[in-house]
Image (cartoon, rainbow, N blue to C red; front, top):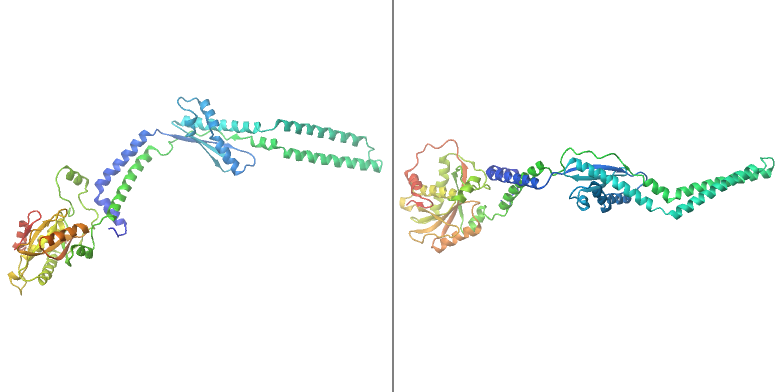
Length: 468
């Protein structure tokens, strides 16, 4: 699977063949999420909105949001609330402020109960408005304000004097009086425009408008917990355990070094592939053998069965499968001298290969070909070889070895070890046979089984057996 594309069928196979393990790990993840929820007390969050009238730039609004969560404001809130064991430093972790549309600053407070969360948000909004208003008032220069007020008074007196002079002048009887009244009115108009511009340029006027912040009502009492809730933690823990388990299986499969290709297997054994044979799939064809508590635990969790093997393909009846064994044995007989004896080497733990080797040995002990005598047919003897410490029987009557194994079960190093063990015992690896599982057809051949076939299966105890 190291070069295969991950498909939904692969994930479905993991879920189907590892459902016990997945169920257990999902329950463990849910329990971890539940335990985390017990360590984290419930939290409730609500918000209060403060309106800032006037024209504000974006950076000014951001500055006001920072002021709302500053230590000065939050410390005053802590002193006003007077909660036991809660100081300003802890409250700063529970209070947030952000700029919303329309010159609105939304202040949020988080507490253990809905009532406390509501009081916290409201109190922060009140203290923020009071502090911001005080800052604007303190920044006003009193000397400048006094000078501006004196100037206004002088303008008022001058305007009054202009009115008196206009009334004292001859009311339109002479040309000079008309010109004088006209000039006085122009002077009054210019003076009024100057005082208007002075009022507009007064910085205290703009600051006073911006200082009129409004708290837009009390904060709403929260109706539910703030995330993550206990339900979210439980579901999140279960989902995270499920995903980690599936990803772990996929990662292990991609990093697997077990050979699957026919050319790779033949090259690792230093021989040629003679063919492939099929055996009917058992219910647990890839179940590992073992004893003890560890094996029982693996079997209980369902991890004693290979999940990365594809589902067996559909096969015909027993007669069609036996034809493939006979054809394979015929090719083997054509490659070997007459009367040669061979060892059929099967890696320990490969149940599929062991069944195929027994069937092949049984076919070799059956009737020979019509044009050959019994002595001309190569005799086969099945032996099991450990992949961790491979040891093949010494060269005796047998003069060669035939390796039977299933694809996707062994690494290149393990197969090379078997090949070296055969060479060390004086056996030449004459060929490789791959065994695979197939779903047995509903109809079986009516041909009676040969006595040699029954003897081969009965005589092969564990991993060894043979026919001669």
